Image (cartoon, rainbow, N blue to C red; front, side):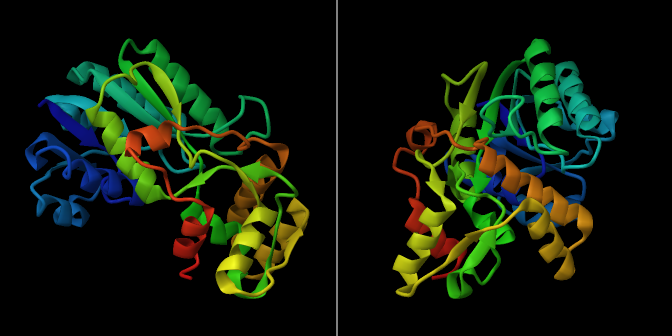
Length: 289
């Protein structure tokens, strides 16, 4: 089999995709790209080839992609020059002879509803670059990570109740582990070429549903109070959060309230070959219940 390369190898998603890949194809067919190859030594111990690559260093990308058929392109962090970095990677992939690029985008109902600052515009631009690149592509639209709900709800939500800046908005979720497993499946299956794939647990929930789920799991009442985005930002700043981080998370809350994540898909289920974790399973894992 031709080689498959995953970027962001030492990050949460990229690392999990790599570990899922070696469960279904030989490690000799898998390449990990990292800016810090020392941090990737545990992957090398699995038999995965580790290569240096940096989105801001075009030549390093061309070298890293040499002899690779497919690239799983983990999106760059928000509020960096994401478009330039992704453009480097896409052009380098074409120059190196890569056939297929899979890009991790964010779920959105459409391009104009409640855009998230630092993410949505650059995702749209990257997707357009891919479509025009001449490469075969797959765009994965990820939902909110269930693992990250405490950032919106507070780490003690299952003990104290919680407030969140999401109103009565509904959203689909999934764990990053199952999204990584599905990413590995996409990389080793056909039928997803030149497509956009929305991945989530197959239904949406309100944050009142989450409170009810926590109440069922803990056996005690859990109160959910919607709050305004600005009140959320002020509360997080009072807790010592940087203003930029609090504002960024507030933007996610606003997007949920406006319905940007209120759509479901069965694609994750098909890729996993089983039903993804349901709400109670996700909450049990996320809040260690």
